[in-house]
Image 1 (cartoon, rainbow, N blue to C red):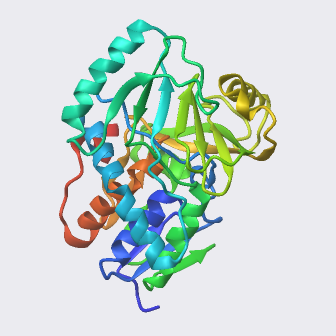
Image 2 (cartoon, helix red, strand yellow):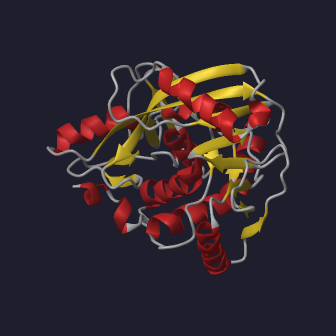
Length: 346
């Protein structure tokens, strides 16, 4: 490869997506991952691309909406370029409602969604059906939205690598030379580096645990019940996630917290009781102090940029994050929301 126009540090979903967005615009791109692709949170199992509730609207929710709405075409382009499926499907989501107060609140959100979602997706309150693939609803009603989508994190990362290489991008595992402008998408380790470089805490890692069960439900909607995401995947598995742990010793080990997660999932959806466990996962997810993605120039380091902090919503935000960062680094066109800037965490 000739001297690259851009180096991306980090082989998680933000790094891979930024590299792909730049490569498809004709830039020569080098991506360096010191460990393995998806070594951190992006190598997980859940892949729930779920919107924030349509109320108390802000720039974070608006940005996420744009990303979710562009996701189908964006991931289709990734798949077409590299020949691998990311496991994407916009299958929607069902959420049971606890009582009539929750039903009234959900109706108000439906009215907001009709405006905020621009008629391109719906949030509806409908009677519960009592179907096996539906958690019990004490109120007799559920929310169904058709904006929620899913992808398989590991499949999506592999699809991005294949697309990047097809576009002429270079993927280096291990040590490599970073030349040209550099985008740092290095997850929790990158947040710790920023804490040190900037002299104050701007983010930290939060441990999460998830598991997958063997249960064929690929065409069914994902579910949100008892605080759990229950996500059917293309490969015949159902992902259950996830915990959020601020106090932990080993970020890569599973423990009793995951067993409790499994029990809660079966209690919410008894049809999963006999489904065998296929995989168990634990990893550390990057959370910026603002809880929004952290994007933009690295303060005081000319030619260096940050794409980090996709806590819980990284895969849903990735298409829009990638295009915004490509605009900034390649064209000098800055459309980063104020609340997402690195300076917002200072």
